[in-house]
Length: 305
Ligand SMILES: [Zn+2]
Image (cartoon, rainbow, N blue to C red; front, side):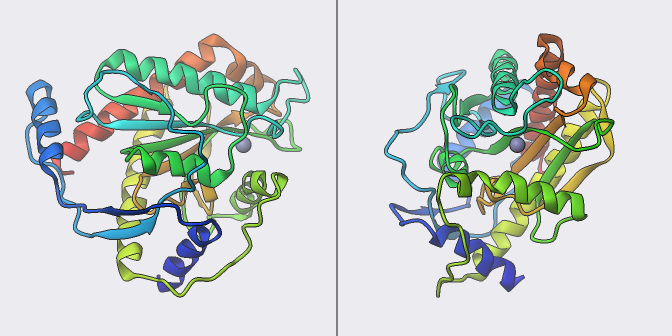
């Protein structure tokens, strides 16, 4: 796992470190008050304690400022950052049927999810982009880290040469891809930064820390448990692939301390999926699935499970 820790750091080392973000994972006074609020509605026990402390460079400061936070103006409520994949000069996959671009579909889905989450009144929500802008991958999770997000959800739509391929898949981070297809997909999604001329190639750093490794492992476990919840909630609402939780090395999931998933919501290359993803009804079904999973997730976290 030390190898993983070093690999993780090298992902951060490619950018100038603007701010060192020292986060203590002991529950703070602020977190306790947040729990009191949530307990008053549904939850009872103390939150799980984070055991490790990590100092890691925060995502690159883009100078653009942080996005608006939607929902209740109460900083004690959990914050979910939604990341609409691609954007700007990176269209993502393009549907051979409708010509729809992944970057437009992912934005529509992210906005639908935002609206569903805000309607619950129980979480705050921010979007990495709410228009057709381009962001390098590190800026995407960098925004989540700078906002101290509790959950990061990146929205995508897959494409395959086989037009029959369809269904959603949820990915969480692993240095080892679960299969060749997962590896291929991660390589393609990670290409967004190459498009923008950013070299992510392995710059090593002297710095490595077992604490980063432990924090990352804990974060990966939380991410995987959210992935399972999301699939459970999505199952009645949409088509999912047979093996619908997979692992791959997506750059966008590499924040060591923010539970993160990448949701490939379906195949834009498949006629039915493309129609579903582009329709208001389909988007609302995806949004409801995510919203239910998010609520169960925070309920569980606070219950210490
Ligand atoms: Zn994508």
